[in-house]
Amino acid sequence: ELVALATGDAWIRTPLVALAATAGGHAESVTWLSLYRVTDTGGLERAFTAAVERHAGHETRTGTVTVFPGGLLYRAPEGPTSIWTFDGTRYVEQGSFPAA
Image (cartoon, rainbow, N blue to C red):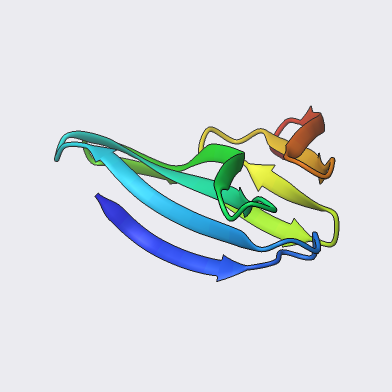
């Protein structure tokens, strides 16, 4: 199920399309955020994908994606946080640290 669609440049000097989609059912589901870079030929190339919400039974865990110039900070629903930088084509994980 498509949850959200947005466009912008996320401070990487190229257009991006952001899609959030949920897969699963009532008992268990995962919501994913994907960022697609618009190529020079007008195609879409995936630059980043990660889970931002996990639902199991009566428990829901949420994560975050915070975009900053040249990169993003991702906190997984399970807790670890990682720093990603944009290499001109995609976001690349540079390191992570556990939740506080």
